[in-house]
Length: 314
Ligand code: NAD
Ligand code: SER
Image (cartoon, rainbow, N blue to C red):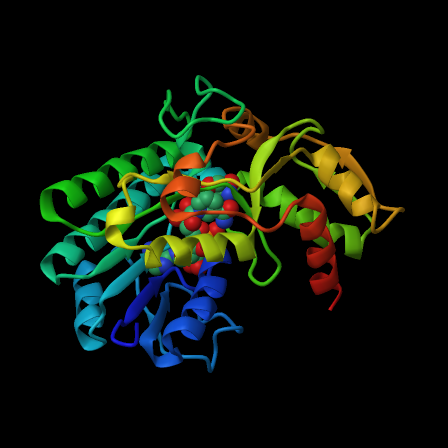
């Protein structure tokens, strides 16, 4: 492991901060180069190298890869579902070109491994809603989902034609407290904890019975690293693996919070994100991940609620 140098692109985002810290623990601080368009995230300052870079600038990326002898890239920069619907052409351009830049650089600079996340957003209204299988009707209806589905096919193409060891997960909605979320439809499940503590009340932008697949960040970070550290021949899927931990509605997360904070109240005012949520699965079947690289989540709704509230109070 000590011989790998890792570039994390989008390192200051919701996943990037925690993934960078986890990779630094595993590979060493100097081996993991954090990079983003934004200023360095306060939690990353002093923990290892940081370079400011636009993922759309392929030649600057090449310079960084050569300068730091990068062997693995984790590409996290993207425009998420809700922001994407406000500016579809920008979302398509950034989400596609960033991936093609990295896949081409993986080929040209002979990178050992690439990680790029997909999403449950690849599924659409015609996909089965419950226990959505790995292989089924896809047909996404958001630009974000279309870009993730196209990206999955590009990953499989570069693996097949150029032998690039690129790996991917279809993350569910991710819940965390260390770094703020970046414009997704599942962000309500983070805001609700903050508002429960600050105001005792939350106005939710999805309606009470909207079930979505969700996961607590420690599980997502562990899944990512376990996938990337699995032997290449265990990875039979070169598009992206379904990944699952829990599924709940705003009403159920409210009840979970009320078990800790009995006075907490919620009201509902659905906006444009309701339509996005309604197009997605309610729960996911991830048996390929379980069977091929032994994926198993640790957190359920109530253990996550206890941990979120404890950490946010601090
Ligand atoms: P985020 O928006 O919190 O972070 C993305 C980071 O990328 C930001 O720090 C942003 O500044 C950076 N970025 C944006 N454009 C850039 C550019 N042109 N050059 C360099 N950096 C740029 O997103 P996230 O939640 O951390 O998601 C990371 C990845 O995981 C994305 O591909 C997202 O689609 C995927 N994903 C996230 C979730 C979730 O619930 N958070 C679920 C499914 C998939
Ligand atoms: N959490 C993400 C979003 O809502 C799903 O990919 O956009």
